Length: 474
Image (cartoon, rainbow, N blue to C red; front, side, top):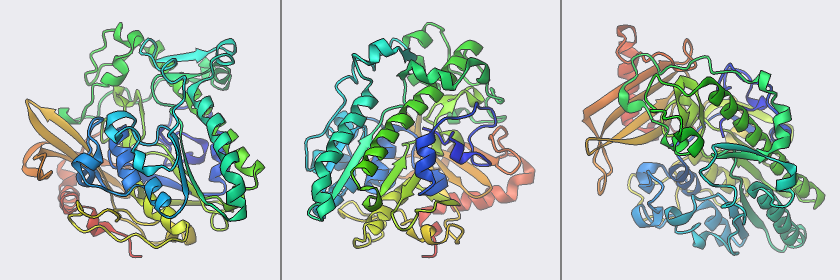
């Protein structure tokens, strides 16, 4: 999910071309949360991003860069958010897509939970590769509920089960609800199309790759091209090619509809918290595991270091602290969530991880956001960091990206892989520099522009120095 939500309207909105968005339940949650306008993921693909957030450590520590490797096998026996709350005596209950399912998480990281894990029974029924999107008629989804409806139903059932002990103070709970949409395929109840009339949907205003973009920065969006309706178009996925206009329009409309479907199911769960009398005592965080490219630059899906891929929604409601609604424009990262939830629950703060934390079960590489709940404008991180791997002719490459208030700078050096997992800065496959003051859509790579030579040198030094030098003064 990208932050294409009404609560993000303004300079942090991902695109100037959009219909009126419909997400009333996220709007409501944001109105009593700390809304992070500029939150960035550490790698724009499911498992690496989720692993990073759930362990509070960056990909070069978890060593998870793909959808296969399990952090406990390649990184370390790191404590996760749900596991931590389980250790604190909470009931820890998960459902849907929290970790990336399957072998990438040892099948939902069983040690993290106190109860059997739940997956929506109809996920396979609605998850085929036949269609990249589909509006499901009422006659069908009333007989076979959509997976995210089944997840909301299960979440409501779980909340009713944990509520009595929670209200009495006998047993706290940690419940993680992993809605799937708006992930591909964009499957949603047909009712939501009415929120997005076809005449309100338009093509992106920047359908071409950034000028002077290095080839290594591009992803051929194979994830989308694997769906049969897209496959038959014989799209190459190459830079400066595009899908047919009608296909782009329909995909964008379907994405928006799927987003509103998720918002609706989220609303049902939040309403149940209210109904059970738990809303004033329950911390609620909402996040999407990465952003999404909807045809901007002719690019689709995630799998890049562009702004649209690494900028994602996040908000945190802490009763008695954020009730009136807070908004911050400060740069934040998804690794910040773990220490934030710990502090919000009034538990012992997590220690900062040392340079090598492979043998340390519990530590953090992010920073608690609780100070921003006291002062959303306080001095904070001056830079945040993302990365994405590539390979070329058998060589491993790692794109490292730094985002400051004004600039995004990315370098694509060689990468050693195991056991060192280190960039090889002397072997460079490309560099990118985007000035967000004059070019918020990242249409012009200024890396080789002489006018930007001084700022590029500064950003290069900051990127290679790394995140530890940019911890906030708290």
